[in-house]
Length: 154
Image (cartoon, rainbow, N blue to C red; front, side):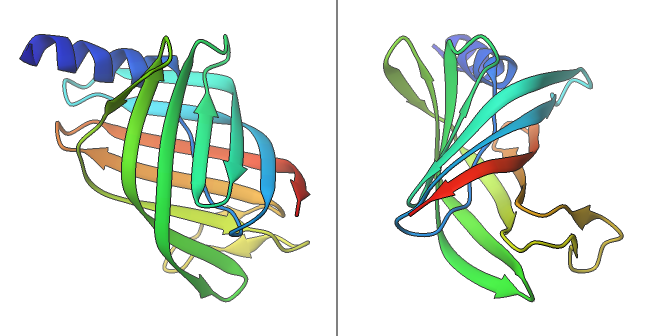
């Protein structure tokens, strides 16, 4: 059972990831890249993942649309023009079944402004309509998602 959960997490991570931020009643769609750094040192990168934001939930679809990473977030605040939220639930969906993922910490950043914005205490800039997500799982896997929102609909 323990080995099966690890495989599910790895498949999820491999399938796609991404996530998250949105205004409470808006819908956003973005394309992005997911990078998964396993605790064993291996790295997977998935370009072309699709990110959809509806309310407080971010769904990241794998490029082949078979797997979905679901991130629910709350406790949002603004740092200048950048919205920062904390995830409270993460799951991997495969074949219509959600598999919860334990995580230690994570952050979601969203820049809905028309100009690039610098992240706090970083030289990294988030482009206009940019999304950046970082999650560290309980097993030590790091998942990073970045992309640009194509459309925001109230």
